[in-house]
Image 1 (cartoon, rainbow, N blue to C red):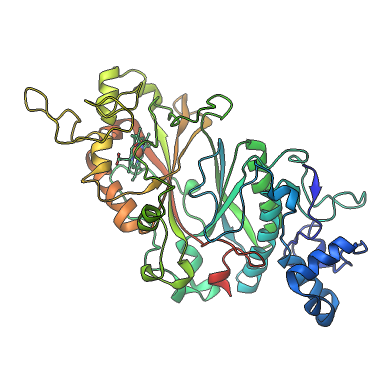
Image 2 (cartoon, rainbow, N blue to C red; image 1 turned 135 degrees about the vertical axis):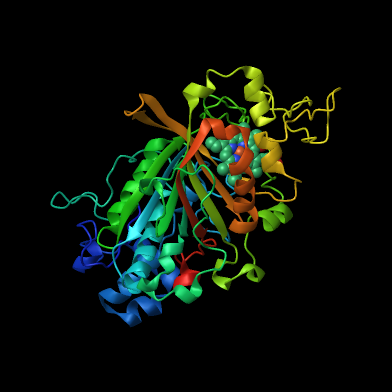
Length: 445
Ligand SMILES: C=CC1=C(C)c2cc3[nH]c(cc4nc(cc5[nH]c(cc1n2)c(C)c5CCC(=O)O)C(CCC(=O)O)=C4C)c(C)c3C=C
Ligand SMILES: [Fe+2]
């Protein structure tokens, strides 16, 4: 698309990199305002603020607030709206790729955090519409504001989803009283083998797109903008089959060869989403109303062991047929799981310790899963692939939903023989961003 978002801002953080032109207080910035620029500024912030407020401060405030994608970009079918009452990337049909990133703040000033969120908002609005970020991309004397690898690419349905972890509410920012009771580190589960290098984080960005380069570009540029305020703590990229390989968009298969996502609740059913995913004001702090809690588990799969087990053992492990994805004893992928069905000898058709049976339970506790496979090279200590599932789920209540199900699974799931949880994190994903507002506004202002 190769459009410049002239007013994308970066934090007014003195330690920020050169793309952070704002810190130099250059006129907007080194350029004369065009009539269109002027209209965009006044449209979003009011001419009074811009002219009456005067000075660079006023313009900078306006600059951060004008994260308006162009109309052309908004109409692009490969662009998912960034603004809305809920964040994108949660109910959005899963894109082909994920680049997940957890960051830690290096600042202890809440004002810096707020500035970063404002700058990330401006950048995210550009990144999800396929625009170059920043307005300094063609000055030969400066490093370009945008790193450039997505120049000319369409937005590829890029979504950026932001959430804060329990550690964000420690003593650093004076926000302890705002920590939702529902946001706490997960308890230890049987069989956990967590490595701190894939755990936790003050804030996460889930970048999903139909092109990995677009998702990578987003995280790279957000990390660059954050310099001096926050640093990357861990990342994980992941994939599903692409739309090109599967134009009909069937349920994707995980690395064990099984359809994964069949039992998800219907994301087009608003009542169901309000029940399963979205927080309401009665759930906790009002700043989380319209938000949701994310559980992330990096699960290594022992694919070499799996590949040596028989098809019937594999199907018993999941309680579903590999080819069709149907529950054992049923025909179609979306047939109900009948956990009471028994064979002639009285044995349950779907083993009680199968993954589906345990995860389903009595069917009253649900979650929205949005997981991706990963393959991260070789484990040199064993010569086996470090591959698995970046499990991601969204739910209204981590304890009642994720923890309740994972506690059941961790004890007796037949799948445990083939997997190890190696990373873990939870995040409170903010409600959606309003036009003219910023990510996390309900918490930070
Ligand atoms: C705590 C929650 C869950 C973890 C962790 C988890 C890991 C995990 N799952 C698969 C593969 C499949 N899971 C399936 C169903 C399923 N899994 C969970 C929860 C967790 N899974 C739920 C709630 C459900 C749905 C149950 C239901 O009500 O039907 C399936 C079957 C097909 C489907 O419904 O998606 C597969 C396959 C892996 C490989 C994995 C860890 C690596
Ligand atoms: Fe599962």
